Length: 385
Image (tube, rainbow, N blue to C red; front, side, top):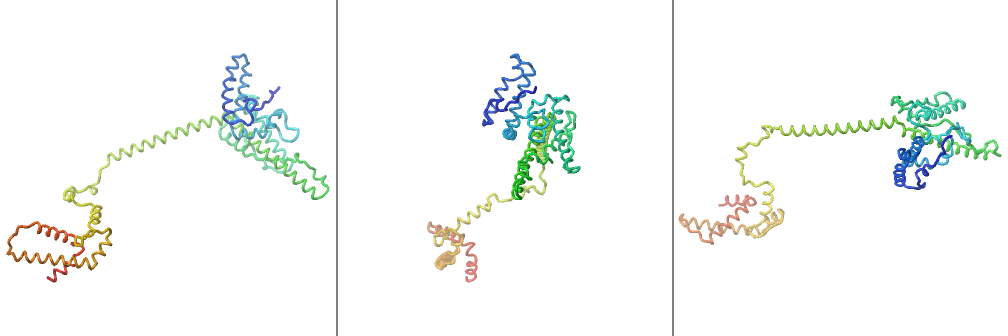
């Protein structure tokens, strides 16, 4: 006699609206209490202890997965009251599927009658056979139902495993679900009524067909998640990816080391070397270009008029002003007079007085200040003298 089915929430001792954290916490506590070793210490038979622990693990696996939990919640009644030994439910032509969403339907992965691959291989085989039979009855012709790959066993190549799950995860039935019709269209009193009856029946068929497809795909997902071949392949792939990451890390380190080694052996070509003689011949007091620009900005000062200017444009406008030109002419005339007086002294070298030193300094500043901007004016003055 098959064991009585229990609600997964009841197994974990949580409410149906509990949070994922509550599910995780309840499972951890019960896993310690219901571990087969502990149960056997209390006198429970090994088979019974193992079955109780598997029931707990199955409940946690389903309810901890958001997708599986949502599907279970929407089909809970059908799962609890379905019968795995029946070939079909009383209200439809389809085989029972909901009872196979429990780990208790199989025992181990060996080639036994209760083995994982035997139980689920037979169930998917019956689904396929019904599809083929229905297609023949409706005269849909060959090829409408694609050949389904066999589930195989632990020795099957992984290509077969992939093909099997790809087929059932993308399953689409050919059943028309005519048995879910609510109305007999022929009983309609008039054309309009019959059309409304037919439309309502189509909606019911479409809904039932979609639900059947979803159930088959959900069962395939449930089985795949527990398939030992898939689990082992995933572990193998994770290990291979980890090895690839390690190799890539080593390759990058070696490339970096080679780059550093190459840099340490680098010799500067002759054409790129600075001629030492040219370097020595350079004036160490040469001002950088930036300093020259800075100095040029500092030189915006008129010695003649004793004025400072903030921009080159202000300075140029001032140079062109009549007031400035008059003062320059006046100052030049005074300098020329002094030169003539000195030449009349007979070449004797006079002792410079403080006033004369001040005039000389002023003249020097004046000439420096006007050296660039008044070049054209000096040329004209020289030609006149």
